[in-house]
Amino acid sequence: MGFEFWMLALCALLLLVLGLLSFLWLDSDLTLLRAAWMGQCPEQALADKVVWITGASSGIGEELAFQLSKLGVCLVLSARRGQELERVKRRCLENGNLKEKDILVLPLDLADTSSHDIATKTVLQEFGRGFVGALRTELFDYPGIRLSTICPGHVHSNIFQNFITGEFTKTRLPEIPLFMMETSRCVQLILVSLANDLEEVWIANQPVLLRAYVWQYVPFRDWILQGCYGKYISKALGITWYV
Image (cartoon, rainbow, N blue to C red):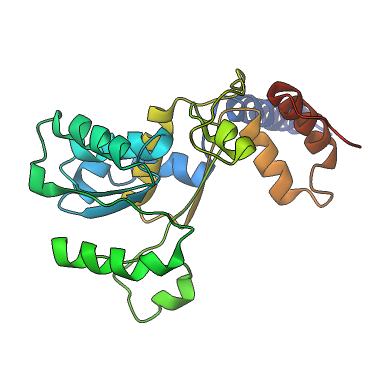
């Protein structure tokens, strides 16, 4: 084998190593990353839209409402805590890009399915348009409607505490200090995915993003990483781990 072959092999190896090292700095999947660099910007694509946010009283939902209000997007804010929704509304109005009529506070418990139809009719009456859907197959006859599945990792919110206690008023468990993404960064990436009609995106800091790729593409489904990571999460939350 000649000198040229070994030089090409060395270059290929260096590119592979550089690619792997670069991946460790990512906080979203490659499709979303490309859209963030080269796709439509949310300021243009989401202008004059109406967005209904459930879980808008805190965490990702609150930050999403705040950033959308900066873009002039009309909002429907839903969650179980009406007082917190009013607080989020005031925060959005302080941006100066929306007026009182542009934000509808609509308290809603998603677990109460009997309230969904009334809530939807309320939104339609207020803004004259809207959509609630769960399956892409239902959108076959509606090509103008897009459905995006957002898969975020751990962000700075009370989601872990609320998940463990089962009550949104109890937040005594400690937050997990490592691997958490700032809520504002998570929402920025969500807006990019919406602006570019991406069907599914993964958003997480490392090594959570790497775990998502391993879980998706490695046949034995990362049982080693899952075991180590699960024990860490349980220890941080004070949960007994059973093997």
